[in-house]
Length: 78
Image 1 (tube, rainbow, N blue to C red):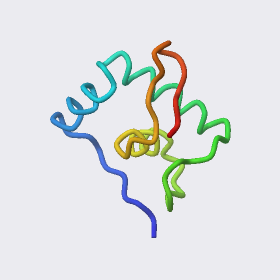
Image 2: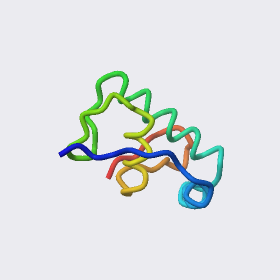
Image 3: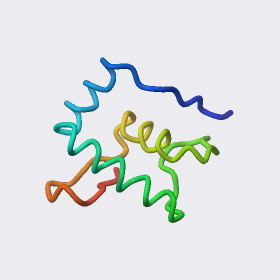
Image 4: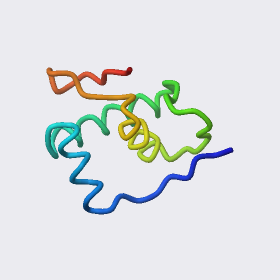
């Protein structure tokens, strides 16, 4: 069963800003994780076969499976 990815609404986006520590950190985290996925890194969410790498990275973040390390560069997977 494929997971349905959706667009973010403003309150959800604000929640992600708070979760990651701000707009900059959210942007860097998503950019780094999307690059990993494009290069063939395994997805951390089950059932998702989509090539929507941004959507996959967002869902991984929402589920608490990725975060940005203190160096603002490294994607930490949990």
